[in-house]
Image 1 (cartoon, rainbow, N blue to C red):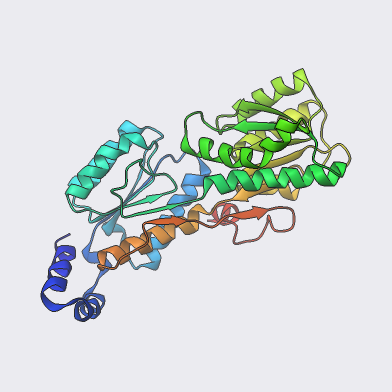
Image 2: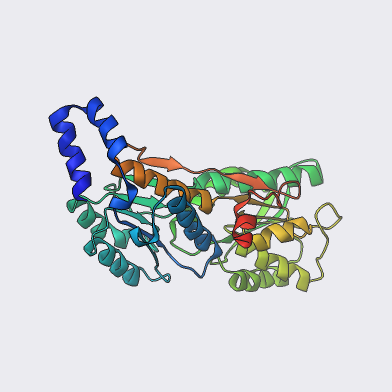
Length: 334
């Protein structure tokens, strides 16, 4: 932290261009302390985010004694305590993945007051004191899922029509709201016209909850053409429910129910490869985590970084699901 302030003072005294060269020449990442977090190690997506952090620290030549990575255990109160500990221990930059958005605002203000920059990964606050926020465009994720299902229905019937299920994520979570928004931007005109019959249920980003929800839906009406899940666990649960009703037709076979999720977990990629699930709209937590560490290093050098960064998205199907650069494959092999 002291060296970071010294660089800023030098800029004021010597001029920007001269010091930029000096700062680059003198900079040593191991003169600083990095604090990083994941919201929970119970979810493979966030485990992959941690792997990304670790890769980033290695790429930047940062020794283990110069960084800390904490697991928030899906408990925002517990996690904010971890944030406080990292700040009090002298962290010079924080890379955070908070469990919830609103409760972290007060801590963000405290870190800003202390002159410690914050980079958010995948999840952030509802304030704007952070230095950088890397996140997937959740509206685009929902929109891409909706478009995939529209294309499936068009190919199946020669026009857009059919019976569709939406399994939502955790109620009140920002990804749930935004992914639902994107999905409905695509689907609602067909629902309103009567071309598509849509059933929406809570899947809670959880396989068992989604399985139970889909079982209830199928008990009421087995005639379904497609399912959109707000994450991969939603469609994995839906697939198990379909199998319980002997709806086992694979992709391309007559009677197949189209299943589209979000994330790109290894379990889902395997199911896609087996023809049980059609597609997932993949994020990449590993590359996001590594980039966050690189950006943290740039900030410590005194360089400006973009405040809001939308991360890469990729539709994974049978053709590309087992590519080695997919994060789900990389995380499984790590």
